[in-house]
Image (cartoon, rainbow, N blue to C red; front, side, top):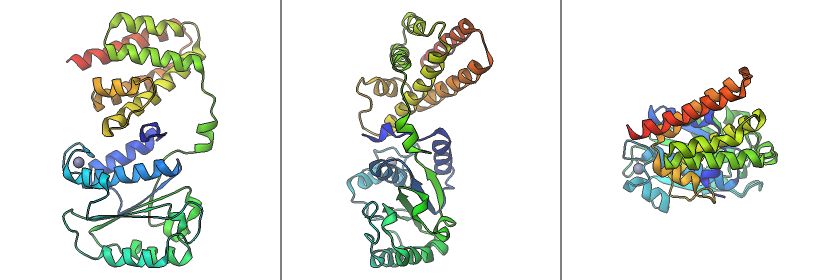
Length: 296
Ligand SMILES: [Zn+2]
């Protein structure tokens, strides 16, 4: 499983990126849900975004981004507990973070402390952390990651801004995938990546007179476009078919986001509009507008 498969919902993605872009991300964030690996990957990506030296954050190319990836950035400290194992993060570890947080950063505007599997903090460790979260030095940022909000005392929760990687990872994993919709979504997006109008029109044909599949297909396309955006910011291969990577190579993040907006409008229309043929026509038109924008 790689980061691009993260089921990061749009609302969370939007909140995170606007907070990063505007420099208003809270001094302490809590990432919950997803898998342990996803939490770690998002934590590092966030740290990269916070310290990135370039405009499109995280660029993954600047020295800061690279150092964080290699685990050698002098202003990024990562500690990790063991999932579900209480007191796997020692109180002394938190105390030393506290002391270090008051030291002036080496090269970045601030220091970042990442506490992975933070549920490993016992009550004493949480109390020690609380003290610094209550009066954080201006040059310190904290990223906590854990399975669930329930792992923390209310006092800690009141000091952090929560972001749920997936609202309910159990439900997402258990959701049945519609194979027809999945195949159609792949076909349409592959056609889109080629920029060939004829292929695009043919690819939407599979959805004729099947409103249920139509909607499921749009939802699957949305997911794949989201993964394609993530693939832009990581060098990780995504889906086995390589469609998401292809989209990511052909379209800019802005174009990919625009497609998502268009698809969401179509989904809203699908609920209101009973005429299936009209829906298909509109889908084709919207898809075309996406490839024309790309050429412009
Ligand atoms: Zn960078």
